[in-house]
Length: 382
Image (cartoon, rainbow, N blue to C red; front, side, top):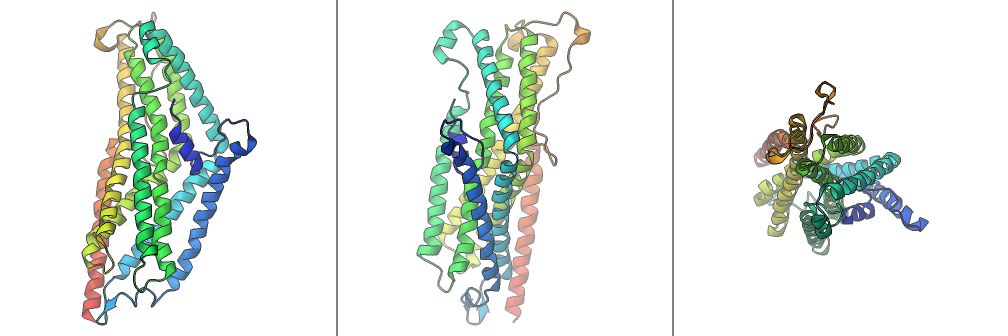
């Protein structure tokens, strides 16, 4: 079982539970990392005060012929964007830190579920298949998750390095150090936040793998499959209870990141210090966060669909292709199964969430562009 995502999440402060090492110092590293990132995030707040107090260090430098080239909307967007990054990274980490006991209990139940699933797969698969694939400690989504994680590493390193090089090594003429840090530090934390959806995907991939195996076990009696399904459903409920609020904040953070980066791309022709590298970075950021949102929503829809298909096979007493897989002797006492879904306190995570997200992005982008045009009209009238 590949746990690279969990290890990286522990290092970055998103999985603050001991890793099972015999060394106490090593076990405390995830907690220390979480607190360190929270303190660093809070420290970023102190950048806002001098940034708000600046008058001539930035705005005076971005004038030409007595005309202001960058609107107040642009600076307000930078300020709000930084605040969103800081709030998201602190909230998610601190929430998981406060729920670390509940998170530890969830993870123990998750490991127990995988052990039960491994035993189930050994009983249902033929000896030849077991000898070929081994126990169920890998899933069909693991290779893709590894590739996506490697791509995330490379992309984050490239974007962060390019951003720091562009604003600090070659600073904008007339811009102060505080202004550059305001532009650089919060987005750096925002890029690191991208590991959180992969942490969620790690658990969702295993849930989907179990459902796929339950549907494919044609020669297993229904009762054995029902028991494993109940355990799976209970673990998904624990997953939502632990990560539900953090999922809501992360989705909101991703949506706002898309809105702000799309706005920067749209206004890049009129921004005096916009560069091709910066515009390309914003475009790829929009695409990356759209992909992360689509991935999480897709996993939620697949969870609902596959659990619904499993319930149908149990209701009919047949597996895929009509192969007999066992039936109840007393149908009136058959348990009622419910679909598994990711229901947070605010919305259900599935592909149905994409439509309101697109509407929200377009609406906010139009509003920002209207503010931008209004600022230009005021400046031109002077």
